[in-house]
Structures are given as C-alpha cells and as structure tokens.
Length: 296
Image 1 (cartoon, rainbow, N blue to C red):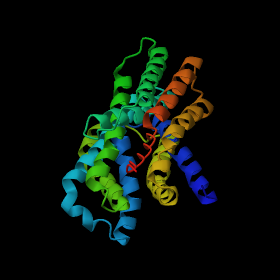
Image 2 (cartoon, rainbow, N blue to C red):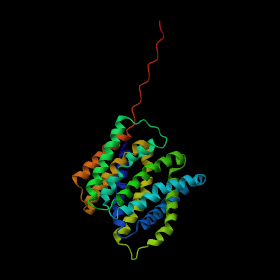
Image 3 (cartoon, one colour):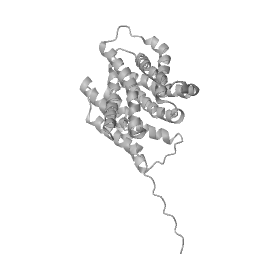
Image 4 (cartoon, helix red, strand yellow):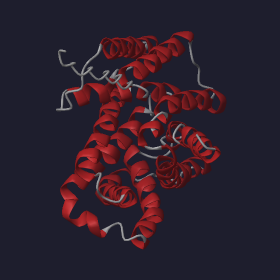
C-alpha cells in the first residue's frame, strides 16, 4: 500500500471510530431524532454542492425508489437507533457491538441469493462471533434493559443490508451523488419528526461541538476520504477499517469519557474480531484440473 493509502486508511479508522463518542455526548442534550436532523442537514449542505458541481444528482432521478430505501436502511433508521441506544449504553460498548456487522453481512448474503459456499472456516468464524457478542452483552446487561442492545442489533443488520442495496441497485450511479441525496432525503424526513422533540433550552457547547464534529468530520469529510481510499486501494481492502473502528471507539470512550472496559468485554471483542476475519475471508480458488492426456 502506498504512503497515501496508509494515510487515508488511518484517517478513516479514526474518523469512523469517533462517532460513538460524539453521539454519546450529543444525546445528553438532544433527542435522537434532533441529532439525526442536525447531522444530516449540515452534512447534506456540504456534500450537495459538490455533487451538483460534478453533475452527480441528475442520474439518480430514475432510481429514486432504491435511493429512498437505501437512505432509510443506511442512515435514517440506524442513526436514530444509535442515538436512542447511547442514551443508556456507553459509547465503547456500542462500538464493540457494532463490530458484529461483518458477521451479520455474511448471514444476510447467504440468505438473500448470494449462494456463497459456507466453508468450515466461515462457519467457525460465525460461531466465534456469536460467542463474542454473547460475552460482550452478558457481562454488560447487569440488570439493565435489553432494549438498547436490541437497538444496536438492528443497527448492525441495517449496516449489513445497506451495502447490499447499494451494490445491487445503485452501484452504477455516482457515489457522491448517492450519499448527498440520501443525507438530504433523511434530513427532509426528520424535520417533522424532530419538531416534536425540540430542546427546551440551548444545548451545551459540548453537544453543539459533538453535532458539528459528527456532521462535518464524521459524515461529510468521512465520505470524501472514504471514496478517495476506495480509489487508492480498492473497495475490498477499504472495508478492513470495519475491524479497527470499534477498537478506536472503545479506546476513546475510556480515555475521554472515563468509561470502564472489563477483561470479559475485551475478550468478547477479540472473539468477534477473529470471527469476522474468518467469516468474511475469501475462499481459496480451486486449482484448475489437469487436462486429460490422450492415450498413446
């Protein structure tokens, strides 16, 4: 990988590991719906002019049904659920649970027509991942409501299904246009929803800063950098950041918010990480058969 590739890769590992921390800070003063509206509105205001300048919005008009579904699955639903969950869960725990996305993606792909061969390594990876998630959840519930855990589980499913929708129905369209339009659609949808949960007083400077960081850095800048990363090292290698983001989220939660991580949680994350690597590893290509020799 080139020096530029490593720089982009490291940037994305940090940029998409930070949102869990910022969401945790923001939902102290803002409702989850208001947070989604603020984040998408600012990010769309940044990315839409770029997409317009590149003429990347016009090709989307004929594909608006798939675009609406993608916006709902990839942005509108998971972002509000993350905000709701982090009203009760630590940012580090939320990030570690979202690490199960690659495992969910394998299951979703296998049940939606991908027909990929479930090798022994993949099956073992799924089993390890399930055990890891069970370990993380088991040592953290401690009498708390299971609803936030379920919400993060739905987020993981959305994050696994969203790329499939993108790949099957929108892959031939300009990427920047798809993301900018999806953010704008989500913002429009959340205007009436967030109107019922306006803050009663001015949010704190920390909450305002968290929203700004989420919108500008973790959304608008993040997608620009991510597209550059894909162009530099390809889409397959770029997805490796999925394995690093949760660790960054956990470290930031401990260092910045003083959250506590137990040995059981870290062991569980290790199992999820190992399971994800095994379950998503590409199968080895079969060796070509030797051509039959003609009898003498």
